[in-house]
Length: 284
Ligand SMILES: Nc1ncnc2c1ncn2[C@@H]1O[C@H](COP(=O)(O)OP(=O)(O)OP(=O)(O)O)[C@@H](O)[C@H]1O
Image 1 (cartoon, rainbow, N blue to C red):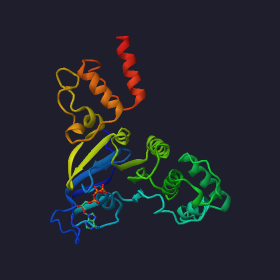
Image 2 (spheres, rainbow, N blue to C red; image 1 turned 180 degrees about the vertical axis):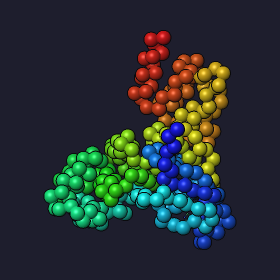
Image 3 (cartoon, protein in one colour; image 1 turned 30 degrees about the vertical axis):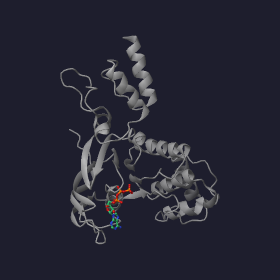
Image 4 (cartoon, rainbow, N blue to C red; image 1 turned 120 degrees about the vertical axis):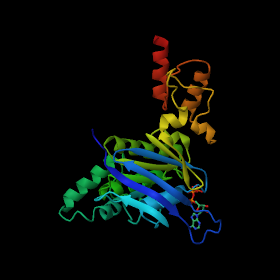
C-alpha cells in the first residue's frame, strides 16, 4: 500500500493570545494531518480561528499548547490576503530575483530563463521589467505565487488570498493553484467563499477554535451517501447547510433535483460536471 507523506501535522494545538480577554483560546486542541499532494480547504466564520491556524501552519506564531510538526526538508510558503504585504522589489524581475537568491550556481541567463518559466507556471504574461506598482491585485498575487515556486515551495498556504480580488483575478489565482496542484503541489486554502471549496478534496470547518467538520468536499456539500440506497437523502441537511453556509449554485441546483428524485447519485461540484451528469441522466 502507498502511504502518502505527511507534510504538516498539528497535535492538540492550542493558541491563547495574551492580549485576548475573552477567556477562550483562538485555537482549542486542534489536531489534523496534511498529506503531500492534497488540497485542503479551511472555512469558518469571523473569529473562528482561520487566521490563527494559518499563522501556526506558516510558523508565524508559536503554539501555547500541543505541537506543530513540519516534515523534514519542507518549508512553509504562503500567499497572504493583501497582495502588497509580500512584495519588496520595484520590478517583476527584482521580485523574482529575491526568491531565487539561493540559486547561486545559476548564471544571469539561466536565472532569466527560470524567471520566465516561473511566470509561465502561474499563467502570468508580463515583461520582467514591468514595475510591480503597475500590476493589478490579481497579477500581484500570481507574482507572489511565482515567488513561492522560485523559492522551491512544494506546499503553499493561501490565506484568504483571493478576498481582495475581483472575480476575474480570483479565477486566475484559483486556476493557477489548480494547475500547480495537478502537478503535485500541496495546497492549503483558507477562505470565506463556499464556491472556492469545490477545488479542494478535503474541507476543515472551524468553529470557535475547534474543527467541527473534517471530511471530503462531496460529503460537505451533499452529506453522507445512503449505504443501502446508494443515493443521497435530500431530506437530511448537508453539513454545509447545517453549519449555515450557502452552497455554490451547482450544488444548490443538484440538491433541488435530488429532492425531485432526479440524478440521486450525482454529486457534481462544477458546471461541466453538472452538464455531464444531466447528459448521463438523459441517456438512461
Ligand atoms: N493578535 C491577537 N490578539 C488577541 N486576540 C486575537 C489576535 N488575533 C486573533 N485574536 C482572537 O482570536 C480569535 C480568532 O481570531 P482569528 O483572527 O484567528 O479568526 P478568523 O477566523 O481568521 O477571523 P476573520 O475571518 O475575521 O479573519 C478571535 O476571538 C480574535 O479576537
